[in-house]
Length: 562
Ligand SMILES: Cc1ncc(Cn2nnc(CCOP(=O)(O)OP(=O)(O)O)c2C)c(N)n1
Ligand SMILES: [Mg+2]
Image 1: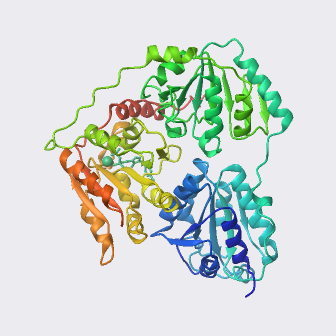
Image 2: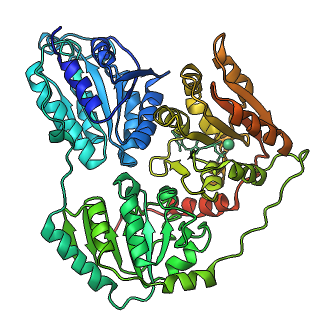
Image 3: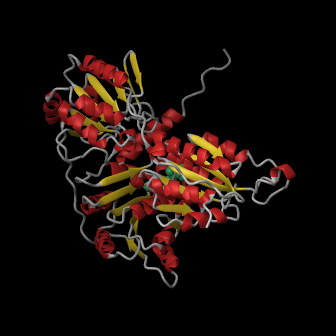
């Protein structure tokens, strides 16, 4: 049959490497969904709602590099804006696609369902511009190739989400076939002169320094520069510290790894090494209020900063220098320097004694962490949701090959359930494990039913401490209490007649150990283990961190009267 706008979009999504697209149907996108479904390389994945749909696409982009979320106009898209915001904040190319009203309606001033009730339908496109790096609304079939290519290319280059709006009567309209995909995907390589000038500047910055430290941030992974980072670090021979959101982007068993730098809640010797350094090379680092513990942990020496497409020094800036190309170029220029590793051996704290609870002991946060630590293998992908799960997860030691996913910039409670679902569809070869609090779980619990439907064997450790403990530590109030659910029983409800989820309850150390064993052998669907702990049983790191974040929130307004 004829080649249409929907076929054009389907072909482009497949050509950039998408194999699953996440959808919630609505009458503005049904023709488009038919076209996407017709593409042999695309598998349609239904989600329970558009918030979860967009968060599943966010998680898929972590595994696949790029993802697509397809929703209906306004009632769908506005919920999907939340996961799109996460993709923006987390530097992930999520392609948000929304159906929209028939092109004849605006000029007829029609009032349409799902809209705000007035005939100006441009509000969604205007809103989308604010949370994406490129937003396009296709006005005619003839414009589709140019606009679809522009949006997808922008997203891939910027590692940010884009927005594509397709009217319901254009998805099936005739369209030309796409040209070579290299026009959409090929990266913008470094400017040679800028790269060499930046390398020269790096040599000057490092000249005479005795105590360099590399600080890795989350954008190092998003820029796809992990291999080149390792090359550069090994050429430098110096200490490597990771920001919490970068955990998993440098091997923790590496002799140069000195821990997670997170101010007073750092791990290992990271805090001491960062304060001892006389030169710091930040690679993809993000200094926000959470990663700097309420601005109490900001490095106070002149920095060399390597970002996704530019490099800065005290007194110099170089545009169009790609992180991966710059790091691999530097690796050929620098000489080995092991002073920092000698210092690290001096500063390295003794490993803490880890108590193994008796089987009948009531479950504690520490015992959960100890047992989760034992679960981790080279095949593990560990998701940690907003809450004390962040702190428990950050303190775990990742074995070689293990992956770690956290959403520290956007910090949407419940993100981990749909995101782990999306991720696991792309990585059936990995063991996806989720650490999530009871409060977070309540936000997106429906997506466990999609894990049942698609038979995705994710292990969910739900830490039930009866409420919003991370919020309690920042600032307590009645609003931090929640209605308790029977989480293990809820998951049974998702099975109905054809599901295979397991819902287990662990009140003691022994019950948790048994539940983990069952989870590890359960492959036909998810296993949710409800771990009950005392509501005051939280990490000391959370209490310290919460105190400083609360203090930062409480800074008085500058005196505006003068
Ligand atoms: C969408 C969204 N809404 C509200 C918040 C604020 N918030 N941050 N953490 C929480 C509570 C998390 O509670 P849990 O998941 O039970 O975690 P724990 O700290 O382990 O108890 C809230 C309510 C948030 N981070 N994201
Ligand atoms: Mg909780």
